[in-house]
Length: 156
Image (tube, rainbow, N blue to C red; front, side):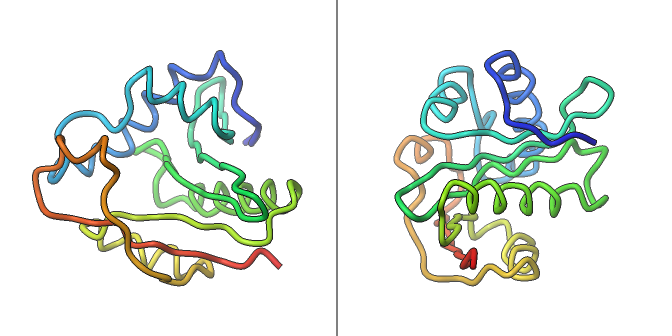
């Protein structure tokens, strides 16, 4: 399976993949995670890495450079390919990409209601470093009180 940097032609498929993967969040957020405008906004600020299999997107992850640190987000694996190690491969590819771009650390946030996520990322070397409020643009769609858990990992 090839992991590569997403191109403009991947945007629609990437948005569908992310929305499928994040459908598990519908218990606390109304609607899709991304729409065409927000997908393009992410694309303009950072890079998506995608894994492609048989011409279809199987996984994706967002990486944004922020000085000597990077931000990882929107890790998405096709629901039929979850629990195969592909998510771990995508995180490792994002970390390597960030290192090559000069980053010394990778930061991320997970919603506290997704209790399975902190232990997953802790196994990959991430540590909880604090909390943050839900993004303002998400607040109107949130149906339960929640916040972000901030996590970070040195990229030594």
